[in-house]
Structures are given as C-alpha cells and as structure tokens.
Image (cartoon, rainbow, N blue to C red; front, top):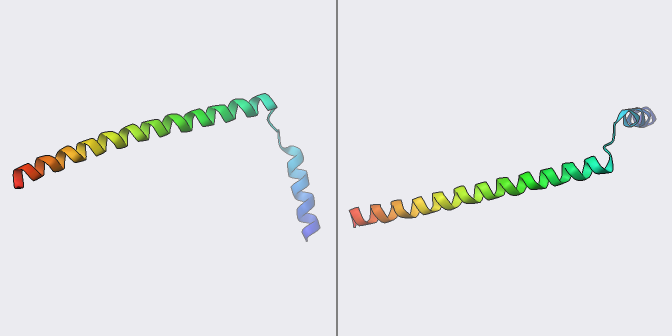
Length: 65
C-alpha cells in the first residue's frame, strides 16, 4: 500500500511546474512587500482607534466626574 502511495506522489510531482529562480524571487518580494504594507495599515488604524478611545474616555470622565 505504501509503495503505491509513494509511486503516486512521484507521478504527481513530475506534473508540477516549478517556478524559475526569478519568478520565485519576484513572488517572495511581492509577498513581503504586501505583508509590510498591510502591517503599516493595521498599525495606523490601531493608532487612530487608540487615540479616539482615549479622547472618548476623557470626554466621558469630564462629563461624569
């Protein structure tokens, strides 16, 4: 049973179209760039929301206290 599985895996791996070195580098750079861009966007949103949260609590504390 295991031999049939291994033969099947080898047969499927022969069908794979592997990327060239240039494609691999380009795709890696693209992914890292997108991850960095989204990290900056999330950081910015977090900072804005944290600022708004602080202002809201300050407003509430002045009205209540």
